[in-house]
Length: 151
Image 1 (cartoon, rainbow, N blue to C red):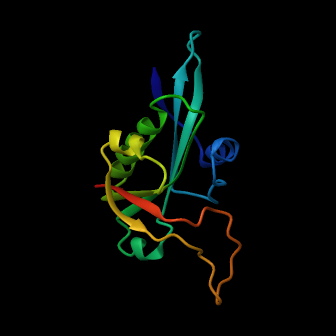
Image 2: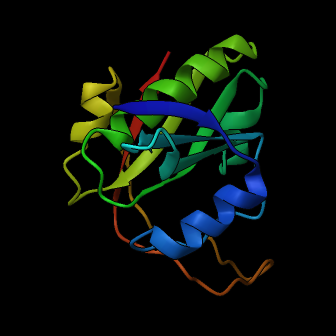
Image 3: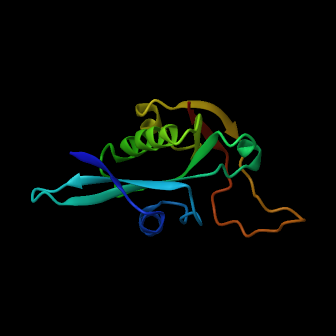
């Protein structure tokens, strides 16, 4: 059985750095949640985390009604991702957000998002955030991404 459990952003960042396939943990966030398996002895074992923050793209944060799931990481437990995406939406909605967005790599199926009722709303071309006036070192995949939304 899976159970949504509270977790601090600091604890979630540690889990992300240990388990995420292609990203490091974000610097911060608005809130985080965890999903746990209940062991035979009744102990809750964390099997996944999600971190929600302000939208990475400043253009999506203009009205302050939108938040973004910036990371989801699990240990591979079935249905953990779907449980986390659902919990993130319920928490964001309870805090007054009207939209929640996230991105997946184009080659990822998005089955967990579909199971949690999210819809594809577009595609980003990908690329680097680095520019001449604000150079950055790219530490993330640069390919196209699928944009998802729950509202």
